[in-house]
Length: 255
Length: 248
Ligand SMILES: Nc1ncnc2c1ncn2[C@@H]1O[C@H](COP(=O)(O)OP(=O)(O)O)[C@@H](O)[C@H]1O
Ligand SMILES: [Mg+2]
Image 1 (cartoon, rainbow over the protein chains, first blue to last red):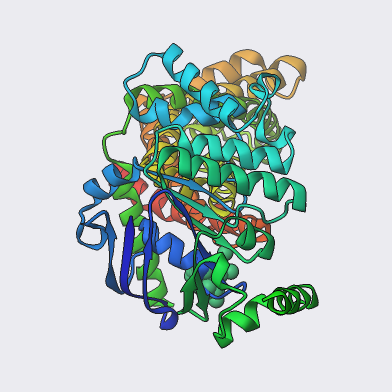
Image 2: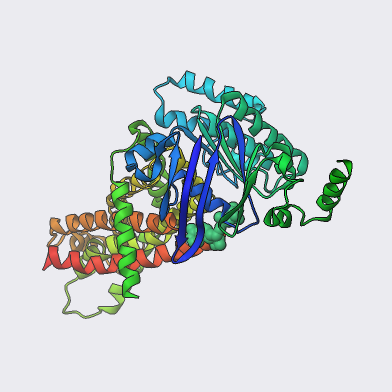
């Protein structure tokens, strides 16, 4: 699990995160939810150490990232996989080479073993062999996301970060991606953190949810608590749309 | 303004410190290197050849036409052409042109990797992205620059020779005598040594602007403009310095 304690982060005097504390459990999809611009990405990138925080601690199963030297951070990062908002596949490499990239950098495997591992990961996310030698620009957005997931899991990460995994995808493809992330998380007992503002994925896979509002943690709980909570921030976020107001009313009527 | 400049210099030095470390994986480095040599080096040979030949031609014709003074020896045309190419054209002017071509290419390549989070993706994997992306570019360009400069000198002289052969403005023997007259081998070395520095400036400064791009496609364009302008300025400044050190 990952534990975050009293995290503060600002850019040029502008405070983006203030006093955020949270736990993220292993084998579960932990979601960070909130409006655009509320600081979700900054929180995630701070946890991984892409941004240096102003104060606070970030514990990876007890190991404090904020105390580590660059060398140790680099070692820790080999246990981390990340899925970026825009997939971030290397556009000069083919699909297969993209997934092999982390192996080529760090593993002592032979070329053949690397290829096997990469192909296994690609098949795990249901990418067909005909796609292996295409360039990222030649495949659809949903496929890019899946290839990016495959790349994130090649080194058997213990921690998986996903920044808005279904932005720009249609509802059906979104669901496929969400399910895939959930399956992989449970299958390999990974500590997964997902950033999202998409209500469908929140209701689908939010095993543990943290709501960020203007850089402050406003609520935490699970998807089952959402309809019963009377937290104002949560209600403002979740029930912004008429659809979910209706859903809430019907759920509460049944009780 | 001054604070900003110092800030930039600081960030540039930090980036270079991260760039000049031992690669995470030598095999990957040696896989990248030839690719960069093709992209930055061999792909620039065409433009160097064309520009140098034409400049050689024009310069020869102009020199002849503007020095119709019987007191000037006939070999002066070849001499002027040779020394201009050796001392300034092949290294400085050519490198300014390459700063435009190669510099914008490097900055936009790295910049687009930055804004599409590909650099973050590398960092997450524990790859030193500065080292992985920038070092091969610097090594490739520093290696290739002297080759391009040599090509440029040769092509300039060939251009001049073409004029003497195809027109009757100057005889071939006068021209050939001119380009051999009072030849100082150090000038060639001077050019080559300068080009090493210029190659480094172009590759590292352009990488710097690309690496710290922030935003979208427009910002990448802006980064590559900054890269070209600032490489050119630095190139000219260092040219003064190098000339001062080596020739005076
Ligand atoms: N590198 C940066 N430099 C300065 N400000 C930033 C940077 N990254 C994010 N911010 C600011 O932090 C705030 C939160 O952004 P972000 O975490 O991306 O929001 P979101 O919740 O949509 O992911 C925004 O106001 C943004 O302007
Ligand atoms: Mg975001």
